[in-house]
Length: 330
Figure 1: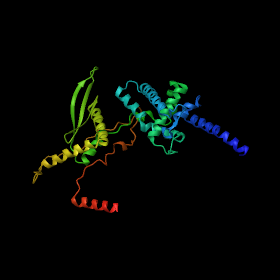
Figure 2: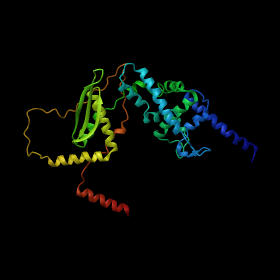
Figure 3: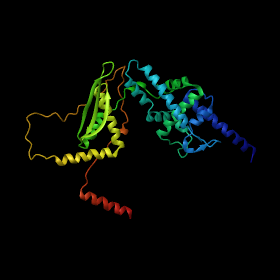
Figure 4: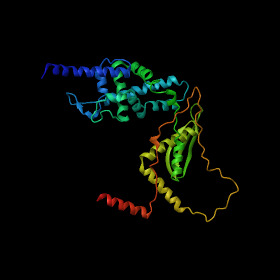
């Protein structure tokens, strides 16, 4: 082996470490003191690496630490920024900022995904893996420089550069409208049943509602207004529709029983009054103002229920599908 080749092999690890320092500086705004913390934060469990004692080396423990630190730091930022806002608003805003989807997009925008060391994920990491790496990075910052550095990193390197805090805070998905749209599309009867109306220790009214679909009980929601309670109940019911096929089956079974019992009249007597039940009342959007920015269009693939439906097939359709399956197996 030539001397130049030996020198190049010695220089290679140093070159890679220098590149890592430069990449981390571009993300963090400072150079790491202990680079080992950051190397660990960028190490995905898929590489199955272990230390001398046989313990796995990956970013899962730093992810756990970073998750806790991030909750505290973002909670403080939101608390300080929105003086006088209720606890529910603050919690909701913090949840949006530290959600897996938000952190994954942040990691991707900052170029963190390209630094990840994993098996079979070269440059195409999903948001879940990248979101975990972002939390692990915060854990590394905490061990390397302390809590204030984590707070400073999120305020100066994330907010304003990658995230508009006000737009996130007032971004709202109309879950009630989405649930109503799904129920109408599938001809499912839906109602909101008020469970309770009381007052808290400060005398503020609290409402509790439950979604009912074809008589089947959906999820419950509580809030300081009817709208807030119904929105929460709708959101949780939408999530349940996506995750529980048994819940969907129960709804359509109840619908089938109802339609069997109903009898269509031979002729309906015309009504002199114009019915207005075709108008769907929706809550007004939050108006744009200097204090409250207009809500942007949001990605709502998480609550896309277009694939959750129920349609009885005709005898001809069943035969056609059976024939197609038979030919496919040959």
